[in-house]
Length: 116
Length: 116
Image (cartoon, helix red, strand yellow):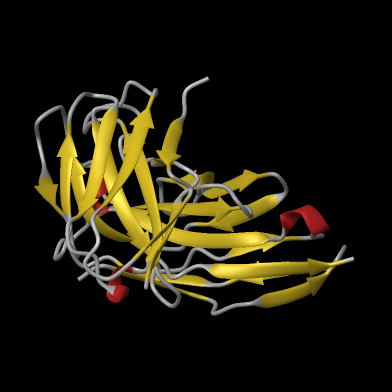
C-alpha cells in the first residue's frame, strides 16, 4: 500500500543540537514537502522538492536545510536547533502539475520535535 | 496573499448532535481555487476528507458535507449526526489547480471533541 513514512516519531534534542528528520514515500510522486504545525497556525511549508537532487524554498525556511536523495526519500536537517523549532513536523507527497489530484497532499504521521 | 480562516477550536459536541465548522477563504492569486477538508486523527497524519474543484458543487465523505460557495467565499463543513470516532482535528485548505501542492494554503485547524 502506498504511503508516507516519517521517522523518528518523537525526538528530543538540546539547543544547538543536530537533528535529521526522515521521510520516505511509496506513492511514486515527484513532489515532496516538509511542513511544520504550530498551535494557532495552519501548516507552514518549510521546503519542497520536485525530484531527486532538487530543492525549493518554502514559506518558513530559516534554520532548516533539506535534501532529496531519491524520488522516495526527503530529509529535513536542523543543524543548530533552537527552541523556536519545537514543533510538529509533517512530510507529504503529491503528484506533479498536470496529473490528476496534483494538489492533493498525502501525509506522514508526523514527527514531534522538542528542542530544550 | 491567499488565506483560510476557520472556526477556532476546540469544538465540543455530544454524540448524535449536528456539527458545523466554518471556513472562509481569500484567494487573491488563484482564479479558481480548489477547496479541501483534511482530517487528522490522533497519532496519524492528515488525510483528505473531501475536495471540491467547482464553485457551487458539494463534496461529501463519511457523512460530512461541504459546499463551495464562491459568493460568500465559504466552504463550511457539516455533519448531521457526529460520532465519537469523529473526534479529530479538521483543516480547511485551498489550492491552485494549475500548480502543485506547494501552493496549498491551510487554515489553523479546528479540534473537534465528541462526547459520548
